[in-house]
Image (tube, one colour):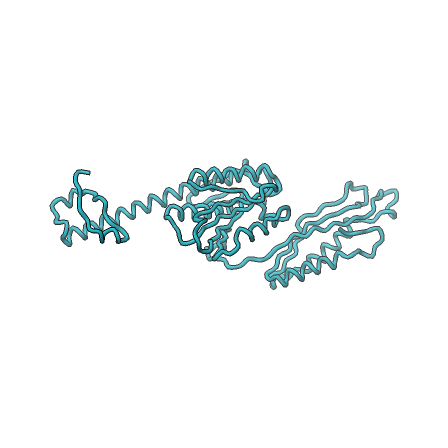
Length: 337
């Protein structure tokens, strides 16, 4: 600095004070205490703040777009441990490069939960930022369908549900860090098995433990097209239904067989009849398998059922109805599991 200034003790009790001034040519002949000088400097300050904010926004936009594309180009399916690990490593490296540390909870399972904390020692109740990284797509989908940004449109597997949403949660955490936010602890929780409803790991219990006592939670999964805030979602469960029958050759001795597939077909019709979309109840037998050959009466059949409901009572009723339906059937040689 080419000079120095003297200020009063009171100046340091203000929310802002000047340590130095930027010199402008058009202020050289102005009295620093005049209204004209103050008006011009306020205009300059507004321009500087606008430029800084635009730079910050552009920086975050570029970082979000880059991470979103990288995540879309990285396959992740909840049932493939290698793809889960690779995706978590990508996110961990990004957080580390921005000064945040991520920890894998329930790391002994194939579906870890990634957690990053900000202000964890603050005494107030925490805020939760929640999302999931897994998609419904099988491993191998990303290579022929990579992430593409065309203007404001991003496409690719997981571009809607919900890799960019997870990136928004990460960006929110980073923005709060940069703004030196201190009011609450902030916890980012990213899970890797949402699409299979956490059926192979205690993820629900882990989320509950990590969110205990929170003042609020925000899930970053995409909402409706009008960008409204969604305050509720349907509950869900996955039910497995397996029928065991008796195998027999369909041409030589069909009378000795008991078809598990035929019985399962009847049960699927009964199960899906429980659907009442107007009331918010849905039963969907989305996965079906069974049999070994066209010429063999099948001795096994299986369906994976997705159950959706709007209230806990509806969920209890649907699960009870499915359990009652799965009581041992009257036909000899058939059994349920």
